[in-house]
Image 1: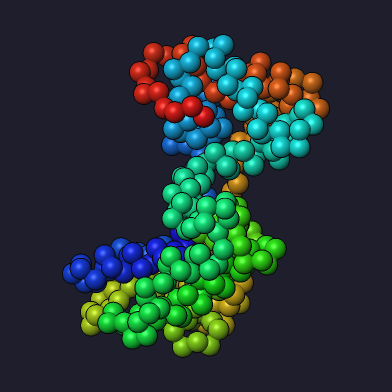
Image 2 (image 1 turned 90 degrees about the vertical axis):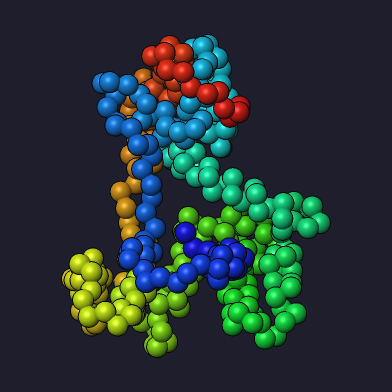
Length: 317
């Protein structure tokens, strides 16, 4: 996940009290879409994978405590939320968007926690001034901090990202825009800033490219050791064979984007297509609430589908 400067400041304060050691684990800058569930997708055995994908693993557990009637009732209310254009049908696209949202619940929970901290005037919006004052107010009073970090430079970088997230350019973020600011890797229109920030971090000679030594140097520090770990040698081969596509010895912006933001298999799209296929009784390519509720056991669990597992009841969805 790409850190904001405020998150970085917290990290640095913790880092300062730790003993510095040479990294032995590979730093991973690649942003992958996570699996929808850790369960096996085998509808012949059960629908646990589908339940996790549709609701998120934690929410799926809450349904396992309900009677079938209660599950159907709550599923019906969820269908109303999925049908964003309120035309009475759930399309594959709407289902895909819902699955992605369910899987990103942790992200929205994180935004909610930070929202209260930054929305100083409680107007339901966060201005750049509010964010800047909360994050940098005390640091900017000291032009020469002891820790050697350039907070003004960090603030400029944050302001650039904030402006990118702020679609209407008023320097005031809605909750969705603030989410894009905190989690830019999750938004298509923010991906260029993710690439730009990554290149700025790694491109030490400031030539606008990432060469092999910069690429390796971001992951591993030699510290005088003659022998590199095997994974470092493998990364050198990866750079030459796959990262540097045009074989010019360095990665440009597009090559860096392909590296850190790969076009992964879209699990949410595949699951949405599967759910529509299994539930679309009249084969018109979209689902009514009735079609979904009729196949409720595919979408959600209940006491009847839980096979007696005792699971803790979570908060209402």
